[in-house]
Length: 118
Image 1 (cartoon, rainbow, N blue to C red):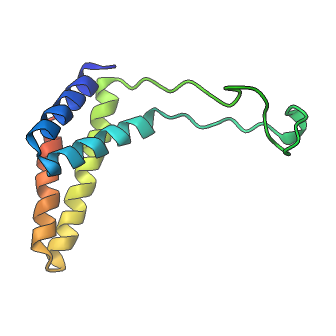
Image 2 (image 1 turned 60 degrees about the horizontal axis):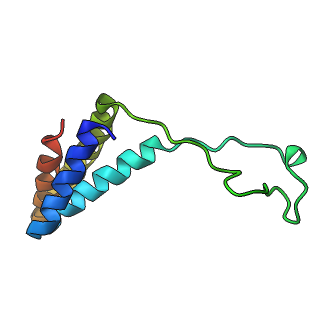
């Protein structure tokens, strides 16, 4: 686990203990986005090359479809967090134009939490 990921998890724990629901939500979302970025595409294996199993196209054996996750660098994690922040700011602008100022402010607050990690 990288230093940035450890900091996110530590801050999430602190926010949970303090009952800071908006901070908890945005940190969980950031950690989930990082986990999604670490996932790798599952290689496609034609059915003709798979084991003979009762279900067409299935593979047999415990862990037969598991693949290792990528390990992101801190810079790559910052890119993911930056994208999350940018998305929130873009949606906040749209909501503000639509007259939903409270929702726009909530997203701007979430973006400011994410900005601490960039």
